[in-house]
Structure formats: C-alpha cells, structure tokens
Image: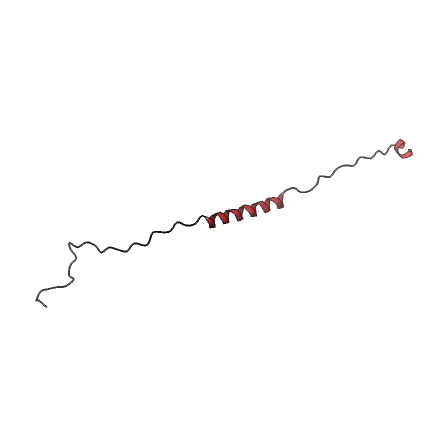
Length: 72
C-alpha cells in the first residue's frame, strides 16, 4: 500500500448512494369494502325490521245492545 493512501476517507463530491425505494403499493381491491358496506346495510335493515311497528291497531267492535236488537 502506498503511504498516505487513506481508503474510504471522505465522501465529498460523491453522489449519495441510491436507496432502494419500496415497491409501489398495489391498488387495493374495492371488493372487501363493498362487502363490508353490504353487510352493514343488511344489519341495518334487520334492525329496522325489528323496530318497525308490527302491531295491529286494536279495533272497537260496536254491538247494538238496544232492546230491539235483543228482542229480535
């Protein structure tokens, strides 16, 4: 080795080392989001069905209780 030859001393004037960038992200599929939205809508529909007013309103049955109706 030659005297005064310092290996790897300074890095002045050199280009910075190229860093390996992460691979570009693949576009996520819309299918999982669509399935989750459909499941949420279905659950909301079931809750709506559960809270819906399903009782039949009571009806008054009017009977004729006059003497003419009873006699005849």
